[in-house]
Length: 219
Image (cartoon, rainbow, N blue to C red):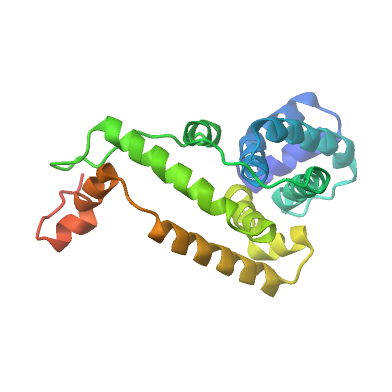
């Protein structure tokens, strides 16, 4: 959504136009839900907190002064609610199932590279599910702060300066947390054993085929 359209929706919501607010929800709900789901590990918490986020937006948007940082303002509300819930619950994040992750993020795909010897679509879905489960398990190993930086960047699309503002930390701290978190994720994912289907897919990847003398035809 371009900045002018977003500004118009915000003005409409501030005037109390329900269609403007509904459009804002349509645009941002999936990203807010994805962020909260990854931070809490609970579908029920994510649904409850997402509703609370937009209830607060309704109450607070009249005081909001648009400066092209609506996402940062919105995700600050979401992050604060997640932290409040975590302080009350005092529980570790739960793993999110691969199927649920794909459905909630809206990113499930069975499309495979059309290469000779590529795994069948069923194998592709299995590999995708295994990768999601492995990533979820790796995310749980991060500290809350590291996970929050990565999720704000991924789902919120925020700059690191905006993330630092949301988390109330210096920019350098936000960057350091992102660096540590991503390094840990890479280390964990690299050590994760690969299934036979994943190994077969890797062997048939364009990069691997090029290494062995194959040429991948461009569409």
